[in-house]
Length: 348
Length: 124
Image (tube, rainbow over all chains, first blue to last red; front, side, top):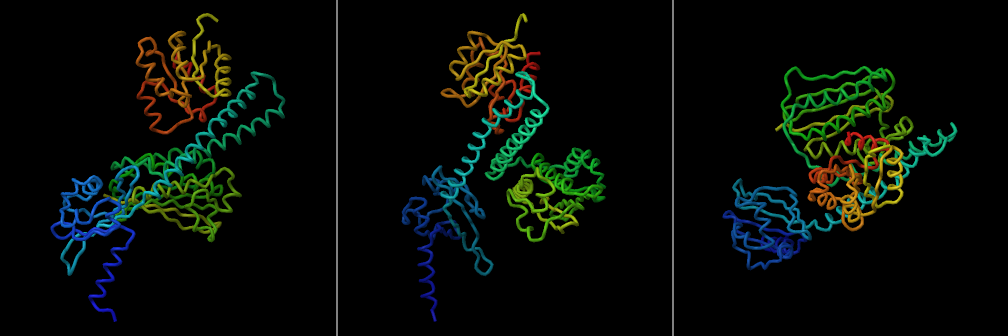
C-alpha cells in the first residue's frame, strides 16, 4: 500500500510533469504553486513568482493579461480563451478549491491552444479566399449568359434559349452554394458575435411567419401558432440570427411537408428557458440518420429525393446560432410521419 | 444622343470589365475604363465622370484607398462611387460606405441589368 507521504510525492511529480500549466493561489491570492508548464508558457522563473500576489502580475509582460482576466479576486472561468499575443492563445480555467466547505484557494489551469487556433484560422481563411476566388469566374459566366440571353448580340432559337436557361440556373446554384459556404465560415469562426439585446420573442416568430404565409397557403398546409396566455419574458438574442434559425426550421417544415399537411409552432415558458417547437407532418427523418442531422452538408436520403435544391447547411447553421446564444436544439422524428424540432433560449 | 452621362469603370478583371463596359454602352452611356487604382484616379480627374464603378481588389492601390483619395480631392469628391466587388463581408461593406461610397454591390448577386438600373437611379 502506498502511504500518505508517498502519495503526496506522486501527486507532485504528476503536477510537475503535466503538459498543462497549473497555478495555485492561496487564501491571500498569493501564488503557492506553479508547475514547469506554466513557467514555460509565461516565460518566467518559478522563484520570481512564488509568493507573489496576483496584483503583482501586472508587472510581468506575459502575465499581465492573465491578471486582467482573473482580477484581484480571481474570478471563476471555464475554458475561457485568452489571447496573450498573436502567437500565444490560451484557454484558462479557474476554479475555487475547497476543503471541508472552506475556500482554501484557487486553482488556475492553463491550456495552450495556439496551434489549434492557428489551424482553425488557416482553414477559415482558406475557405473564404477560395469562395471569393470562385465568385469572380462565376460572375463572368453569369453575366455572359445574361448577355447571350438578352439577344443583344444575336437572335437565339427556342432550343438555344432553353439550354441557356438551364446553364444560368446551374450557375446560380453554384453562386448560392458559395454564399452558403461563406456563411458557414462566418458562423464557425464566430465573427458575427452577436449583439444580444432583450427582445419580445413572440414578435420575432410572428414576423418570420409572415414571410412564409404564401408558401404555406400554396401548399394548403394547416398552420397553427400557439402561444401561452401569459406573456413570455424577454430573451437576450441577436434578432437577425434568431430569425434565421426560425426561417430555416420553418422552411424545412414547408419543403418536406406533404400537400395539405400541417405545421404547428408552439412557444412555451419553461421557467429558466423559453422553448420553441415546430411540428410538421412531413417525410420525417429515417432513424439511422438521426445522429447526422446537425452536421454540415448532411441531407437525409429521403430528403435528397424530395427536394433537389437543399444544401445541407440549414440545420448546421441553426445549431451554431442557438448554441452561440447558450441555448439547446433537439428534435423528434419518425419517417413518413413528421418531425418536431425544438430549441430553447435561456431567460435572463 | 447629346449630353451622354459619363461612367468610369475601374476593374482589373478583363472579362468582367468587358461585360460591364459593353452593357453600359448599350444603355447609352459614355464609358471610360481603367485597370487599376492609380489610372482610375487620373482618369477621374481628367474626364470628370458622372459616376464611378469601383472594384476593391485591384493591383497596387486597393479600392478603399482609391475611394478615400477621390473623396479627399475637391475635384472628385462629389462624384458618386458605386463599389462593385465580390468581397461582401459586413465589415467591408461598412468600411466602403463609411468612406463615402453611394452604394455597394456584390457582383455575384447582381445581373448586368440590375447594375445599370442602380446607375440610372443614382444619376436620376
